[in-house]
Length: 325
Ligand code: T6T
Image 1: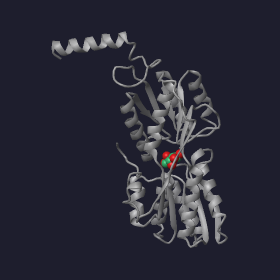
Image 2: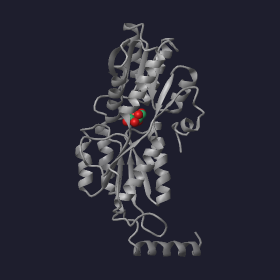
Image 3: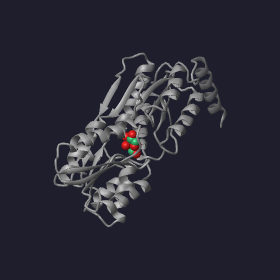
Image 4: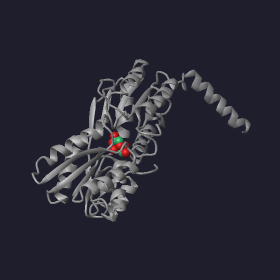
Protein backbone atom coordinates (compact mmCIF):
# COMPACT_ATOMS: atom_id res chain seq x y z
CA UNK A 1 0.00 0.00 0.00
CA UNK A 2 1.43 3.44 -0.89
CA UNK A 3 1.66 6.30 1.63
CA UNK A 4 -1.27 8.17 0.14
CA UNK A 5 -3.54 5.14 0.33
CA UNK A 6 -2.39 4.49 3.88
CA UNK A 7 -3.12 8.10 4.82
CA UNK A 8 -6.62 7.89 3.35
CA UNK A 9 -7.24 4.65 5.22
CA UNK A 10 -6.05 6.06 8.57
CA UNK A 11 -8.19 9.18 8.08
CA UNK A 12 -11.15 6.95 7.32
CA UNK A 13 -10.59 4.88 10.45
CA UNK A 14 -10.31 8.02 12.61
CA UNK A 15 -13.53 9.36 11.11
CA UNK A 16 -15.32 6.06 11.70
CA UNK A 17 -14.11 6.00 15.31
CA UNK A 18 -15.28 9.58 15.82
CA UNK A 19 -18.72 8.66 14.49
CA UNK A 20 -18.86 5.56 16.69
CA UNK A 21 -19.05 3.35 13.62
CA UNK A 22 -18.27 -0.32 13.38
CA UNK A 23 -19.48 -1.43 16.80
CA UNK A 24 -22.78 -2.78 15.51
CA UNK A 25 -24.51 -1.10 18.44
CA UNK A 26 -27.24 1.48 18.33
CA UNK A 27 -27.01 2.15 14.62
CA UNK A 28 -28.12 5.41 13.14
CA UNK A 29 -29.50 3.99 9.92
CA UNK A 30 -28.24 3.19 6.45
CA UNK A 31 -27.27 5.49 3.66
CA UNK A 32 -23.92 7.04 2.91
CA UNK A 33 -22.21 8.84 5.75
CA UNK A 34 -24.46 7.28 8.39
CA UNK A 35 -23.67 4.35 10.62
CA UNK A 36 -25.01 1.14 9.15
CA UNK A 37 -26.91 -1.63 10.92
CA UNK A 38 -25.69 -5.20 11.30
CA UNK A 39 -28.42 -7.66 10.42
CA UNK A 40 -28.12 -11.45 10.36
CA UNK A 41 -30.43 -13.70 8.38
CA UNK A 42 -30.72 -17.18 9.91
CA UNK A 43 -32.09 -19.56 7.29
CA UNK A 44 -34.12 -22.70 8.02
CA UNK A 45 -31.38 -24.77 6.39
CA UNK A 46 -28.30 -23.99 4.30
CA UNK A 47 -28.17 -24.92 0.62
CA UNK A 48 -31.96 -24.81 0.08
CA UNK A 49 -32.70 -22.69 -3.01
CA UNK A 50 -35.75 -21.19 -1.30
CA UNK A 51 -33.49 -19.68 1.38
CA UNK A 52 -30.74 -18.86 -1.12
CA UNK A 53 -33.30 -16.81 -3.08
CA UNK A 54 -34.46 -15.21 0.17
CA UNK A 55 -30.86 -14.22 0.96
CA UNK A 56 -30.53 -12.66 -2.52
CA UNK A 57 -33.59 -10.47 -1.88
CA UNK A 58 -32.34 -9.57 1.59
CA UNK A 59 -28.95 -8.60 0.15
CA UNK A 60 -30.59 -6.35 -2.47
CA UNK A 61 -32.47 -4.47 0.27
CA UNK A 62 -29.35 -4.40 2.46
CA UNK A 63 -27.33 -2.83 -0.38
CA UNK A 64 -30.00 -0.18 -0.91
CA UNK A 65 -30.30 0.63 2.78
CA UNK A 66 -26.59 0.47 3.64
CA UNK A 67 -27.01 -2.53 5.93
CA UNK A 68 -24.28 -5.11 6.67
CA UNK A 69 -26.00 -8.43 6.04
CA UNK A 70 -24.64 -11.70 7.35
CA UNK A 71 -26.32 -14.97 6.31
CA UNK A 72 -26.10 -18.18 8.31
CA UNK A 73 -28.04 -21.40 8.64
CA UNK A 74 -27.92 -24.90 10.10
CA UNK A 75 -26.89 -27.91 8.00
CA UNK A 76 -30.28 -29.53 8.61
CA UNK A 77 -33.80 -28.20 9.12
CA UNK A 78 -33.61 -28.87 12.82
CA UNK A 79 -34.38 -26.66 15.85
CA UNK A 80 -31.45 -27.95 17.97
CA UNK A 81 -28.98 -27.13 15.18
CA UNK A 82 -30.67 -23.80 14.46
CA UNK A 83 -30.49 -22.89 18.16
CA UNK A 84 -26.71 -23.41 18.05
CA UNK A 85 -26.51 -21.04 15.08
CA UNK A 86 -28.70 -18.50 16.85
CA UNK A 87 -26.54 -18.67 19.98
CA UNK A 88 -23.43 -18.00 17.90
CA UNK A 89 -25.15 -15.03 16.25
CA UNK A 90 -26.22 -13.70 19.66
CA UNK A 91 -22.57 -13.50 20.69
CA UNK A 92 -21.96 -11.21 17.69
CA UNK A 93 -24.67 -8.80 18.92
CA UNK A 94 -26.23 -7.78 15.62
CA UNK A 95 -28.83 -5.00 15.62
CA UNK A 96 -31.47 -7.30 14.13
CA UNK A 97 -32.02 -10.95 13.30
CA UNK A 98 -34.23 -12.21 10.50
CA UNK A 99 -35.01 -15.83 11.23
CA UNK A 100 -36.98 -18.68 9.64
CA UNK A 101 -37.73 -20.67 12.82
CA UNK A 102 -37.62 -24.42 12.22
CA UNK A 103 -40.20 -25.25 14.90
CA UNK A 104 -43.20 -23.28 16.18
CA UNK A 105 -42.39 -24.08 19.84
CA UNK A 106 -38.78 -25.22 20.22
CA UNK A 107 -37.44 -21.94 18.82
CA UNK A 108 -39.34 -19.74 21.29
CA UNK A 109 -36.80 -19.78 24.18
CA UNK A 110 -33.68 -18.95 22.10
CA UNK A 111 -35.58 -16.29 20.16
CA UNK A 112 -36.88 -14.80 23.41
CA UNK A 113 -33.29 -14.66 24.67
CA UNK A 114 -32.29 -12.72 21.56
CA UNK A 115 -35.19 -10.30 21.96
CA UNK A 116 -34.33 -9.85 25.65
CA UNK A 117 -30.81 -8.89 24.57
CA UNK A 118 -32.39 -5.94 22.73
CA UNK A 119 -32.07 -7.43 19.25
CA UNK A 120 -34.90 -6.69 16.80
CA UNK A 121 -36.44 -9.98 15.65
CA UNK A 122 -38.26 -10.42 12.32
CA UNK A 123 -39.52 -13.81 11.18
CA UNK A 124 -39.23 -14.67 7.52
CA UNK A 125 -41.14 -17.65 6.05
CA UNK A 126 -41.96 -19.70 9.17
CA UNK A 127 -43.42 -18.37 12.44
CA UNK A 128 -43.55 -19.33 16.13
CA UNK A 129 -46.37 -19.53 18.66
CA UNK A 130 -45.22 -16.47 20.59
CA UNK A 131 -45.28 -12.76 20.03
CA UNK A 132 -41.56 -12.06 19.82
CA UNK A 133 -41.03 -10.78 16.29
CA UNK A 134 -41.78 -7.15 15.45
CA UNK A 135 -42.82 -8.32 11.99
CA UNK A 136 -43.66 -11.71 10.46
CA UNK A 137 -43.33 -12.03 6.69
CA UNK A 138 -44.66 -15.25 5.20
CA UNK A 139 -46.46 -16.78 2.30
CA UNK A 140 -50.18 -17.29 2.79
CA UNK A 141 -49.55 -21.00 3.24
CA UNK A 142 -53.16 -22.07 3.84
CA UNK A 143 -54.06 -20.44 0.53
CA UNK A 144 -51.07 -22.14 -1.12
CA UNK A 145 -52.26 -25.52 0.19
CA UNK A 146 -55.77 -24.83 -1.08
CA UNK A 147 -54.42 -24.00 -4.52
CA UNK A 148 -52.43 -27.24 -4.47
CA UNK A 149 -55.58 -29.19 -3.57
CA UNK A 150 -57.69 -27.59 -6.29
CA UNK A 151 -54.94 -28.07 -8.87
CA UNK A 152 -54.40 -31.73 -7.96
CA UNK A 153 -58.17 -32.39 -7.99
CA UNK A 154 -58.37 -31.03 -11.51
CA UNK A 155 -55.35 -33.04 -12.66
CA UNK A 156 -56.79 -36.37 -11.45
CA UNK A 157 -60.33 -35.74 -12.77
CA UNK A 158 -61.56 -35.22 -9.18
CA UNK A 159 -61.24 -38.88 -8.22
CA UNK A 160 -58.88 -41.45 -6.74
CA UNK A 161 -56.58 -41.82 -3.74
CA UNK A 162 -54.23 -38.96 -2.90
CA UNK A 163 -51.31 -38.67 -0.49
CA UNK A 164 -49.58 -35.74 1.21
CA UNK A 165 -45.81 -35.95 1.58
CA UNK A 166 -45.10 -33.43 4.32
CA UNK A 167 -41.87 -32.47 6.13
CA UNK A 168 -42.43 -32.92 9.89
CA UNK A 169 -45.07 -31.72 12.33
CA UNK A 170 -44.47 -28.40 14.09
CA UNK A 171 -43.36 -26.32 11.08
CA UNK A 172 -45.85 -23.46 10.66
CA UNK A 173 -45.61 -23.25 6.87
CA UNK A 174 -45.93 -26.90 5.93
CA UNK A 175 -48.57 -27.61 8.60
CA UNK A 176 -50.66 -24.79 7.09
CA UNK A 177 -50.14 -26.08 3.54
CA UNK A 178 -51.43 -29.50 4.59
CA UNK A 179 -54.40 -27.84 6.30
CA UNK A 180 -55.26 -25.80 3.18
CA UNK A 181 -54.90 -28.88 0.97
CA UNK A 182 -57.19 -30.96 3.20
CA UNK A 183 -59.79 -28.18 3.20
CA UNK A 184 -59.74 -27.99 -0.59
CA UNK A 185 -60.04 -31.71 -1.35
CA UNK A 186 -62.97 -32.15 1.09
CA UNK A 187 -65.06 -30.55 -1.65
CA UNK A 188 -64.54 -33.55 -3.94
CA UNK A 189 -66.50 -36.69 -3.03
CA UNK A 190 -64.51 -38.86 -5.44
CA UNK A 191 -61.17 -38.14 -3.82
CA UNK A 192 -59.97 -40.55 -1.15
CA UNK A 193 -57.49 -38.94 1.24
CA UNK A 194 -54.76 -41.36 2.37
CA UNK A 195 -53.36 -38.88 4.91
CA UNK A 196 -49.90 -37.39 5.35
CA UNK A 197 -46.48 -38.99 5.69
CA UNK A 198 -43.32 -37.18 6.79
CA UNK A 199 -40.08 -36.95 4.83
CA UNK A 200 -38.06 -35.18 7.55
CA UNK A 201 -36.93 -32.86 4.74
CA UNK A 202 -34.97 -35.75 3.21
CA UNK A 203 -35.57 -36.38 -0.53
CA UNK A 204 -34.54 -40.05 -0.17
CA UNK A 205 -37.16 -40.56 2.54
CA UNK A 206 -39.79 -38.83 0.35
CA UNK A 207 -38.89 -41.18 -2.52
CA UNK A 208 -39.22 -44.25 -0.28
CA UNK A 209 -42.63 -43.03 0.98
CA UNK A 210 -43.80 -42.91 -2.64
CA UNK A 211 -42.42 -46.39 -3.35
CA UNK A 212 -44.12 -47.98 -0.34
CA UNK A 213 -47.40 -46.13 -0.95
CA UNK A 214 -47.47 -47.36 -4.55
CA UNK A 215 -46.89 -50.93 -3.34
CA UNK A 216 -49.90 -50.69 -1.01
CA UNK A 217 -52.04 -48.46 -3.30
CA UNK A 218 -51.25 -49.24 -6.94
CA UNK A 219 -54.12 -46.94 -8.00
CA UNK A 220 -52.61 -43.92 -6.30
CA UNK A 221 -53.85 -40.93 -8.33
CA UNK A 222 -52.01 -37.95 -6.90
CA UNK A 223 -49.46 -36.57 -4.47
CA UNK A 224 -49.13 -33.16 -2.84
CA UNK A 225 -45.57 -32.63 -1.64
CA UNK A 226 -45.44 -29.68 0.74
CA UNK A 227 -41.91 -28.36 0.19
CA UNK A 228 -38.86 -28.39 -2.04
CA UNK A 229 -37.07 -31.52 -0.78
CA UNK A 230 -40.30 -33.50 -0.26
CA UNK A 231 -41.35 -32.64 -3.81
CA UNK A 232 -37.97 -33.38 -5.41
CA UNK A 233 -37.84 -36.72 -3.60
CA UNK A 234 -41.45 -37.66 -4.38
CA UNK A 235 -40.83 -37.10 -8.08
CA UNK A 236 -37.66 -39.19 -7.91
CA UNK A 237 -39.71 -41.95 -6.26
CA UNK A 238 -42.16 -41.90 -9.15
CA UNK A 239 -39.34 -41.98 -11.69
CA UNK A 240 -37.80 -44.99 -9.91
CA UNK A 241 -41.16 -46.78 -10.10
CA UNK A 242 -41.53 -45.96 -13.80
CA UNK A 243 -44.79 -44.16 -13.00
CA UNK A 244 -44.02 -41.01 -14.95
CA UNK A 245 -47.29 -39.20 -15.62
CA UNK A 246 -49.52 -42.00 -14.17
CA UNK A 247 -49.54 -40.41 -10.76
CA UNK A 248 -49.89 -36.62 -10.74
CA UNK A 249 -47.70 -34.54 -8.45
CA UNK A 250 -48.28 -31.00 -7.24
CA UNK A 251 -45.23 -29.73 -5.39
CA UNK A 252 -44.53 -26.62 -3.35
CA UNK A 253 -41.53 -24.39 -4.25
CA UNK A 254 -39.55 -24.00 -7.47
CA UNK A 255 -35.89 -25.01 -7.24
CA UNK A 256 -34.00 -25.50 -10.52
CA UNK A 257 -34.39 -29.31 -10.09
CA UNK A 258 -38.12 -28.97 -9.48
CA UNK A 259 -38.49 -26.86 -12.63
CA UNK A 260 -36.54 -29.53 -14.57
CA UNK A 261 -38.95 -32.19 -13.23
CA UNK A 262 -41.89 -30.03 -14.34
CA UNK A 263 -40.42 -29.74 -17.85
CA UNK A 264 -39.86 -33.51 -17.89
CA UNK A 265 -43.54 -34.18 -17.12
CA UNK A 266 -42.71 -35.91 -13.85
CA UNK A 267 -44.43 -33.14 -11.89
CA UNK A 268 -47.53 -31.37 -13.20
CA UNK A 269 -47.67 -28.18 -11.11
CA UNK A 270 -45.64 -26.22 -8.56
CA UNK A 271 -47.00 -23.74 -6.03
CA UNK A 272 -44.33 -21.06 -6.09
CA UNK A 273 -43.53 -18.66 -3.25
CA UNK A 274 -41.75 -15.29 -3.39
CA UNK A 275 -38.62 -15.87 -1.28
CA UNK A 276 -36.73 -12.87 -2.73
CA UNK A 277 -39.59 -10.63 -1.75
CA UNK A 278 -39.74 -12.17 1.74
CA UNK A 279 -36.01 -11.48 2.24
CA UNK A 280 -36.28 -7.94 0.93
CA UNK A 281 -39.29 -7.13 3.13
CA UNK A 282 -37.56 -8.69 6.13
CA UNK A 283 -34.62 -6.29 5.89
CA UNK A 284 -36.91 -3.32 5.26
CA UNK A 285 -39.06 -4.11 8.30
CA UNK A 286 -36.03 -4.65 10.55
CA UNK A 287 -34.52 -1.31 9.49
CA UNK A 288 -37.86 0.45 10.01
CA UNK A 289 -37.98 -0.92 13.56
CA UNK A 290 -34.37 0.05 14.27
CA UNK A 291 -35.09 3.59 13.07
CA UNK A 292 -38.19 3.80 15.25
CA UNK A 293 -40.44 3.97 12.21
CA UNK A 294 -43.76 2.22 11.73
CA UNK A 295 -43.50 -1.55 11.26
CA UNK A 296 -46.11 -3.89 9.75
CA UNK A 297 -46.68 -6.78 12.20
CA UNK A 298 -47.74 -9.32 9.54
CA UNK A 299 -47.13 -9.34 5.81
CA UNK A 300 -48.51 -12.13 3.58
CA UNK A 301 -46.73 -12.69 0.30
CA UNK A 302 -48.36 -14.30 -2.71
CA UNK A 303 -48.07 -17.65 -4.44
CA UNK A 304 -48.35 -18.46 -8.14
CA UNK A 305 -49.00 -21.86 -9.70
CA UNK A 306 -46.42 -22.88 -12.31
CA UNK A 307 -47.15 -25.48 -14.96
CA UNK A 308 -45.07 -26.58 -17.92
CA UNK A 309 -47.19 -24.31 -20.12
CA UNK A 310 -46.88 -21.03 -18.23
CA UNK A 311 -43.21 -21.26 -17.23
CA UNK A 312 -42.26 -18.41 -19.56
CA UNK A 313 -44.92 -15.99 -18.29
CA UNK A 314 -43.02 -13.16 -16.60
CA UNK A 315 -44.99 -13.53 -13.33
CA UNK A 316 -43.88 -17.17 -13.14
CA UNK A 317 -40.39 -16.88 -14.63
CA UNK A 318 -39.51 -14.05 -12.21
CA UNK A 319 -40.64 -16.15 -9.22
CA UNK A 320 -38.51 -19.26 -9.86
CA UNK A 321 -35.78 -19.86 -7.30
CA UNK A 322 -32.07 -19.51 -7.84
CA UNK A 323 -29.03 -21.38 -6.55
CA UNK A 324 -26.88 -18.22 -6.58
CA UNK A 325 -27.56 -14.49 -6.61
O1 T6T B 1 -40.91 -24.45 1.45
C1 T6T B 1 -39.79 -23.78 1.95
C2 T6T B 1 -40.16 -23.04 3.19
O2 T6T B 1 -41.24 -22.19 2.92
C3 T6T B 1 -40.57 -24.03 4.29
O3 T6T B 1 -40.85 -23.35 5.47
C4 T6T B 1 -39.47 -25.05 4.51
O4 T6T B 1 -39.13 -25.66 3.29
C5 T6T B 1 -38.69 -24.77 2.25
O5 T6T B 1 -37.53 -24.13 2.66
C6 T6T B 1 -38.30 -25.52 1.02
O6 T6T B 1 -37.33 -26.49 1.28
